[in-house]
Image (cartoon, rainbow, N blue to C red; front, side, top):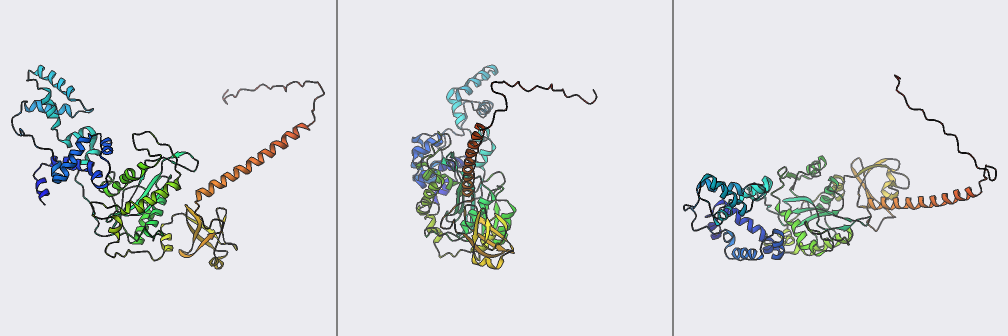
Length: 487
């Protein structure tokens, strides 16, 4: 409490500056990010960061407040009009240097027969400018809102009280299906209370309603991995205004699951610092150690990892490192905080009910005597014997085509298995690529044989002209110019 009493003695500007300094050194204090890396990212001196850390550990946020000048409030060496002139020049865009401001002020002062201020006086006035004023002038209203607007910090009171979801392109280059370098997208769903990751999805496709639905499906249902316990239906689902989050399908899903949808402020997705902090942690503690890491402003890394290899490493890091890493704000590890207190998550009645709600890829097929034909494969289950000749609804995960779910009048019938794909995970995209490649091979064989036939037929084709006689070229007919109808 003593720290808070000390902090209230300072002005709003001083408190805002102290909080800004704390956000800079926070990765070092909480996650052990080296100060050298933070200094490079923020273009600050390492000595300055070390001084901030020392002051914060000694006096908390109050230690990060810049000391007041001893002559503050006393009569200055410049008039109020001169000070406003100096401040106005300093707030111009593009930003002027102190030397440029001093020269301009000296010129105006001589014209107006004022006392010319010294360089140190001009520098002092520029340095004492309100940081909020300087930010608004030089960086615009968007940056000002992010750094100085008052925020309402949402806090969940128990596990699954609120989940947050978002997408981000990762700062790494991977090898895509064609062997080319590409930047992957990461979609995550985070539990606000524990900071656990309930579900994630990594791919080269841009965010879509399908990606969100599949990630939410993974987050809600029980995981096969014994190290990943988080599951259940959240009370609140908190997202931004992306089209994939504001779709009518997701609204219907939320109503069916009795899950409240909340959207962040339109055009200003703030107040969701936990999920943004996780993305920063991924970049700093995971991606920075991998080949192909390409942070903004650096030379593009060489892609060497494939998407499956990268996802396997990400999953290991997530479950064995991030979930077991103590976090200062919650005074615990994410995994321990979610599991504490004997929490019993609220689950859907069955996985089939969840599939009916969230699997947005829907097709109608007729049941044949040998099962259901789909994408060139045959899917079969004994339960389909009672539906031969009837149209059914199939739902499937495009990233795993080994099985499909069969529904009849919105009632779950069975899971039909493809024997050719059973025991492996293969996506619809892989199937289409393999099919296209096979078609090209067949076409190449056809073209090769057609060329041989054409060549041999040309050899045995009789020459219609007499031996040695050169046939004249065919007569050319004069082309008539097109004319307009009124000519």
